Structure formats: C-alpha cells, structure tokens
Amino acid sequence: MFLQNKGKTMKDLFGKNRLKINLHTHTTQSDGKKTPEEAAKIYKDAGYDAIAVTDHYFFTEEGSLSGLKILSGAEYDTEMCCGREGVYHIVALGCEKDPEIEKEPRLPAETIVEKILAVGGTPVLAHPAWSLNQPETALDLSAITLTEIHNSVSDAGESSRPYSGCFADLVACLGKPMLLLATDDTHYYKGDDETKNAVMVECAEDATEKEILAAIRAGKFYATQGPEVHIAREGDEIVVRSSPVCRISLFSNVAWAEGYCLRGEGLTEHRHKITPREKFIRAEVTDAEGKVGYTNYIVLK
View (cartoon, rainbow, N blue to C red):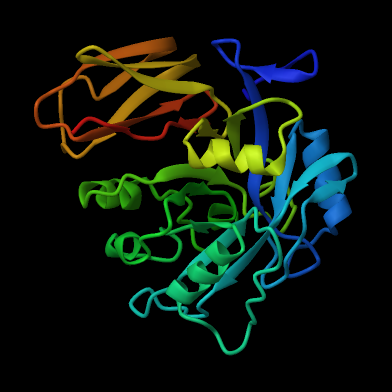
C-alpha cells in the first residue's frame, strides 16, 4: 500500500518526509476526460500531494486546484506512429514559462528538448516501451536523464506496453542509467489509468515546485504502484529494504547472478553481495496484490 499520512506528512521507513506525486496527467485542455479541477480533486481524494498537468501542446502553469498543488507541465511529440520512424513523446516539467512549442509543423525531438531546457524545464522521455523507442534514443537525446519505467495508460489504453524496465536497462548497459519514474499519463478516468502510479519524493511538506523538481533530478525518490522500496550500497553488499512484499528482484548489466530474485511472504529486506561484473543495479519489489515498487539505479563502476 502507499505510505499513509502520519500527521500532515507521509513518513517513510526511515522517518523521512515523502510527497506523493503524479507527473503525467491529461485533462480536457487536451484529450483527457476530466477538467483540471476534476482531475485535481480525484488525486487529492486519493492522497496525492501534487500532480503535474501535462496536456498535449497546452502549457499549464504552477498553482493550485481543488486544494491540490499543481506542477507546471505540458507534453510534446513528433507525431510519428511507427516505432521504426521514431515515436518521441516528451513531457516538460517545471518550466518557468511557456516553452511556446507549436503543434504544427512538428519539431524534431532534439529541438523540443532544447526549447524545454531554455525555459528552465526538465524533459522526460515518456513511455519508451509504448513508443517502441530504441535504447540509442536515450543517447541521442543526451539532455534527457529521466524516463518512465511504468505508464498506467499504456496498459489501460490500447497498447499493453506499460513497462519500460528492459528499455531502461539496455540504456544503462550503454552507459546512461536514467532516473525512473512511474506515472499514470491519465486520460480516461475509468478506474484503470488514474491514481495507479506515483513518485514518492523526499522533501518537505511545503516544498516549492523548484525544490520538488530539484529533488527529483537528484534521484531523491522511488517510483511505485504501492510498495515502499529503498536500495543502498553497504560495503560489498546491495541492500534492499521495503514494506512487506512477496518478491524482491534485482536488475543489472549481468543477465543472471545468484540471489537476483527472492520470493516469500512478508519480505522486508534482501542482501546481495556485489559481483565483479556488475556495473549498475536496481531493484523492484512486488506485493501480494501484484503492485510494484521501483528504485533508481546504483552505479557500481
């Protein structure tokens, strides 16, 4: 289950404050089925502290709706529909002003990223598995350091490709471990694409948008559908700690190593001795309801 409120803030296993945030949300400002106010209320009622409203080619400023903090955002794309041609959807977070990216003519992905950066924004490569992105994509778009490991609407919609862990691991094998977000990319609001994912960001309850985005860029979060999960290096071991789960899995540049998957009931910790071949490692945990939590990478070499 998601962390529960203890007082006014959410506390993790170590007593640190966590904000629960969805970073990819659509509304009637583009092709979403709820108004911004309705979407904000849905997420507030579900215990979220903030959402980014990221409508297609419509910039939403930072603010507050229905008592929920709103992070500025938008989403831009290259319009291609075939993976071979290159399908790039790029979410812009935390822009200081509208990046003024027009829908027509469509711009190359590199230009979209440049325009987002020019106004202080953080670009995110959205749903790479859904888009059939190649790992080299992340190298070509060198300024993008965040991607989505899970995207709810890519399961609730028509593609059934919500999980991008294999893409992320291949990119890491090429020398670029990215920060991994879990987002909803909410469109339909029928019960299967809203309030399913979150990033749990380590920061103060009253953190500003800039402080939240700085924490995200620094990797001070874990992504989750429910379980809490943390990963750390302690000497020659990787240690994963979590809320009670039934599976703890490790992923690295090595295809297989002993102890990469632990199964049981009520698991809360797993220790793995680092092998000489491992260059990076991350963890996923799965609870009894099948909900998954995702850590970011630890770079070993």
